Amino acid sequence: MSLTKFRTLGRSGLVVSPVALGTMTFGPGEWGADDATSRAIFDAYRDAGGNFVDTADIYSGGASEILVGRFIRETGSRDEVVLATKFAFNGSASPLTATQAGGGNPNAGGAGAKNIHRALEASLKRLDTDYIDLYWMHIWDGVTPVEEIVQTLGDLVRVGKIRYYAFSDMPAWLAIKAATIAAERRIPGPIAIQVEYSLVARDVEGEHIPAARESGMGVMPWSPLAGGFLTGKYRREDTSGSGRLSGANPFGNSKFVDRNWDVLDVLKAVAADLDRPAAQVALAWVMARPGITATIIGASKLPQLASNIASTEIELSEVQMTRLNEVSASAPGFSVGLTSPMIRRMVFGGNDVIGWAE
Image (cartoon, rainbow, N blue to C red):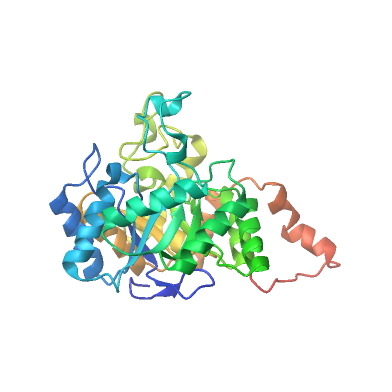
């Protein structure tokens, strides 16, 4: 695999690299990269053949979009780059007031038509472009009807302000409902979902990944290294108690549980067999999983990007995949249990039957 082994995103004609450059680190902030470093990371990704750049309106308070737009403009690469950005989170309130009642404009966030139009116009201005290739609903707000979301985003596709749209961090049923409404009404529908997915976060295999496959949507994992946990830089003895993951991530110390440490032990062993860093093997595992179209990687330093790109060179053997799959397997939920090999054999009279999409 390489960055130029392109594939289409879901059941669409949008052609993307298997690794997208996440730019949450572009811009000021505790974990951000300065302008020069951000530009070096962008250039290195493009020089390696990558064409898929992912940002969001809230990254670095909008600075990420400004930098990405500038880099694309200065390199004259707008027609080559698949530019993705996101909407939904409210940027009108401070982090303190945003967690309390009041304090911000409620119509400056969410998935309602009013905010979608507001957010898109602001992103187009910061990115200095006439259109967005892939517009993500960053997170579902829990209240806007699916019909409104699909109609609003579908209309934006039709007028050319966005080429495609997709959903991030939403219930599986919402993605399925959106795809069904779009198909029945013959309007543009979502082409991808974005979910947390890694060796220590596999619960989306129960509903989200099958839902995406059934509806023709690509799956793009975010945080495939679990906020840095799977790099192997943390040790069990150092993180008991008050330890937490460093860097820009929402996990705190939630990854420091016994099961995850067991996964990390096996990951390190497989990495040692391959003479590769644990992070590269963790990324290679994600990219080899069924249903994964493209994986988002980020970097605040150039060597991090180079290491992440190198993961595309790794081909895990069947034995290595089995070791990683077995140690990281999540407890099966209700829906997974219904489709287990044992239940399927009971249904089909003791025979093994493989579905068309498996």
